[in-house]
Length: 257
Image (tube, rainbow, N blue to C red; front, top):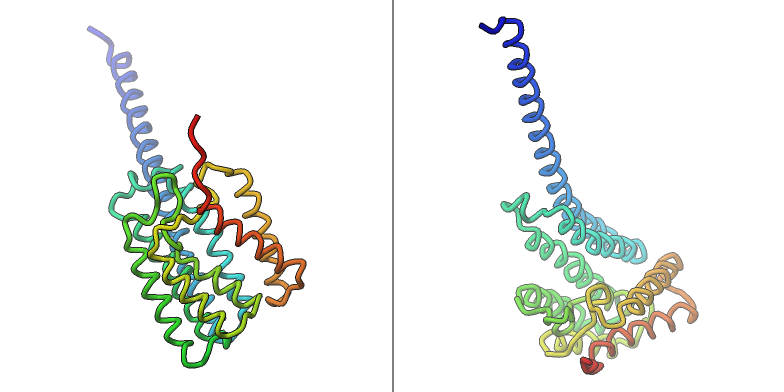
């Protein structure tokens, strides 16, 4: 017969270790879940930023509005890699990160900029509200397009970057007819098969694209700090970079060796 003191100790220790292991696994599972949900909250912060940007826009604090929209761009650029790194879609299948991203992108890329364009005073008065209506309708339809991206990660058609279009309208202050023509042209280009560059995901010339994107961000920040009235040393480089990103999608794909 095995003494009671010898038989009970290992069993007790085994149960204790088992309980600790189970608690550790539950703690880790809770941490993974909270971390995944935090990524969704981080994405949703973009909507809060858009709300703040809209309030600033109604007070005609345009530079502050564009600063908020720029910050929303950073959130949009970071949340995707975080979601993939933390397997958010697998950990939290109930919530669709893709749907959440579209909702936030619509208000930051389309809705708030549509108001800014309509209220800019840089359109013929009779066309101001219709221009904003065109922006939100074309933007909504574009986000519903399941083929908005090509297999090589270009955007198909103008990717409703109305936040950037509005930014250029404010810093360049074109004639009213030219602003109206620009809005009309971009609305039409939304539904054309022309490729537009995604500077982060397109592999061709990626280093150059990212470098120009960083340069653009620095110049745009200078423009915002200067209350959207920067000198030509800012507006010319910003315009050249914009032209490059537009033309890059039109360049023929190099032949594979």
